[in-house]
Image (cartoon, rainbow, N blue to C red; front, top):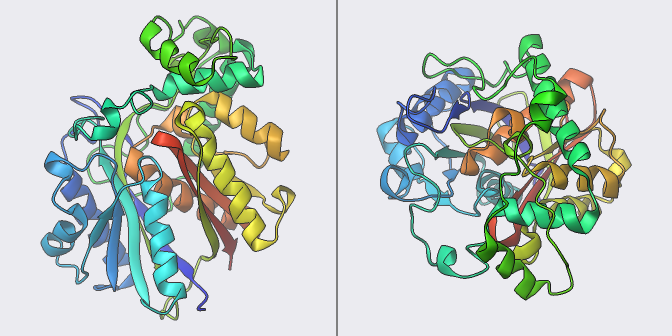
Length: 379
């Protein structure tokens, strides 16, 4: 088996997923074209054995194998495939790249993700999953279920929401997100970040996922002993939707200085009622594969699919604030479904170098109880 390395990473800013948002005026294809150009300028790489792009809503402007289309229109010599594991798609693209390079089937693969939620809205692919009872369960309700099961309070969730916004604002001011950033429009930073927030702003918000009895009924059917669901998450403790893309150069034996070794990858699944715990399960699997414990990892980039999931992760794995989403997360900076995992992995590599740390993990939980994790070692 070949050692597999992350050589370079590029990503767009995250723009608000709405008309007039900072990235809404650029197509998903144009995002990928711009990042391929930037990657070529940084590395000199003009071809790869494959271009693998994660995307959750593959319809309209995101349909028709967008990866292959981008390779053609950007003049990048690569076959191109588009993959979908919902919110974990960007990390799964890297996972596939790792497998190809490790096995010797490829020497260089560009992997990442893209999502323009403003141009291809969630559920617009009209997939059959969304018509199933469990498939129609809103992720926010699933997060409230976990908050109920785990006994988290509204005060704890609000405190986490404030923490991630504060850290994100500080990190942008300190330039911690600059290395991988490629501004393709006038936007030069993640648009959702709100500096100067206080706890009062969070405590004033109403629960976001209450008042939907049909949703609660789905939960009760599958969790009859749960009792009343405590709807505690608000807009301030939920991930903000956005438009973004990210690409990473993964390979072995390239004439470039590697930034990190891709040690191991893992996927996991859980039932859709507690769907958002699969990312944590994937982390536990990837650490076991590598023979590591949670204490061996100094940098965790975990997609903030609602505050309760982050509190559960930190508590269960014993991960303190000094190692967990130290530059803010998707609650503050935005969640661009297929792109999120690739953005987190780039941030993980950047933070490992900033700290001089050895091991880092990026992980994402996705719809239908899916999750993926990737373990890096700084080189």
